[in-house]
Amino acid sequence: MGFLDEFKAFALKGNVMDMAVGVIIGGAFGKIVTSLVNDVIMPPIGLIVGGVDFSDLKLTLKQQVLDAAGEVLTPAVTWNYGAFLQQVVDFTILAFCVFMMVKMMNRLTTKKKEEEPAPAPAPEPEPTKEELLLAEIRDLLKERK
Image 1 (spheres, rainbow, N blue to C red):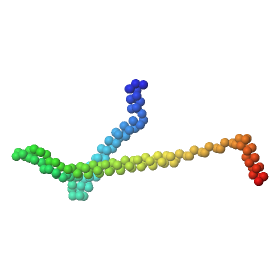
Image 2 (image 1 turned 135 degrees about the horizontal axis):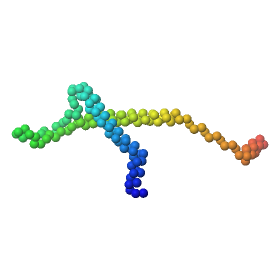
Image 3 (image 1 turned 120 degrees about the horizontal axis):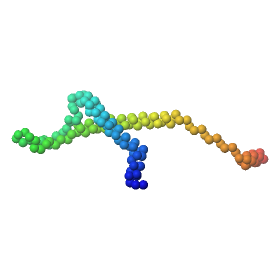
Image 4 (image 1 turned 45 degrees about the vertical axis):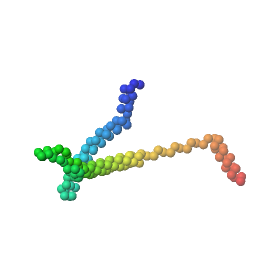
């Protein structure tokens, strides 16, 4: 089997294809959640806390340096904790959505297993002539005692 054949066998396995589909769907789902956080959830929260846009929250560690003409010689050094807070909210919502999807999938697979009837127990085989004879001998011995 050549290198190309091995690669083809690997790449077309069900697990690899499932993983690729999961990564692509996950990336698209991540964009949806990011939009949900940035465009739907964070604006009202910012309004509640005084009209603050969380992505703009930052602490200036070192001021920018300007020349006489007002051009920036050295940019400001900032600690952008607002962007971090936004990413934390983004992650939390994404993790919650994934948790709910896994929970739903587990519930569906559990229901499917419950719906399948349990296989009937196999009937016990007929005793052989020897077993019947031994049972008779046992019973006769019990009666003698």
